[in-house]
Length: 179
Length: 168
Image 1 (cartoon, chains in turn blue, red):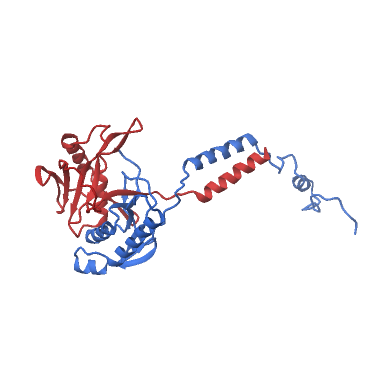
Image 2 (cartoon, each protein chain N blue to C red):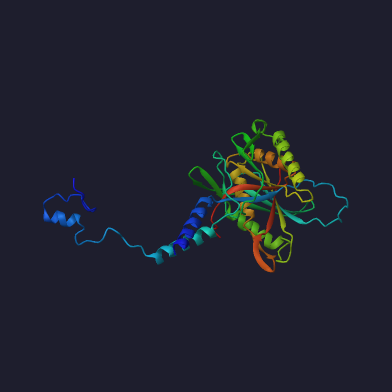
């Protein structure tokens, strides 16, 4: 078998002139397109600037998928603090179970959630042991579903406050400002 | 040129991977609970005026200015729940309440100067059945009133009130 020079082979066997012209590239634009470096670098620089401006060093706050957060306009940026989530009747602290709200929902009375209280108190003591001499910020973020009743919110709020977290923040979805 | 383009590509990849696309934020509300005992008792300070916002009936809000338990003024604001549904997410707006709170603060509020380091206090009271989304709507309305506040010699606009959530 003879050795042929490398090159285009497809449809070269068709004995028609217009087919030969087409498959060899004809008089058309080259298949190898040129790229304007200036435009590409402009695009890359703009993308880098946009991403740097929207960069958040604090990272993404985990949101429980069963929690539908309400929305508000006049909100503050998130902070690093323990997150107490209420999903259904379960209470979670940083994703770990910390009691439930069934007794409160049944009685419709304000009650302390002992498991939540003990976990938050433990976290507070741990924080103080690891940072001696520093003032404890006492901040907790509540991640509560939009349809949870006020008596449950009050119970969790009061439990957190009594466990040493009087500065409570409610996690919400930020809405664009209208005024 | 090639190392420069490589650097841009790597930077874009890093920023895209670590980008935060969610719009999570927070609304602050403190609880008035007793603090730890102090070694030296602070001097007795004059109790300040506080705005109590009562949300106990479905037809109105009651705004009450109180100073050490004494009622200074009371205003009723009709309650109109502007409920907006977006998918299965709800949001409630109370524009009339926000306007009234702002007007009340402008006439009765104590801490209005940009050099004043303290803020007026608003205390939200609600019944036990109200859904959480309505509480957020009211807290959002309270935070709509803004005042100038000097930060490092520059006046910035901050919410006029500190919000306390009353559990009683």
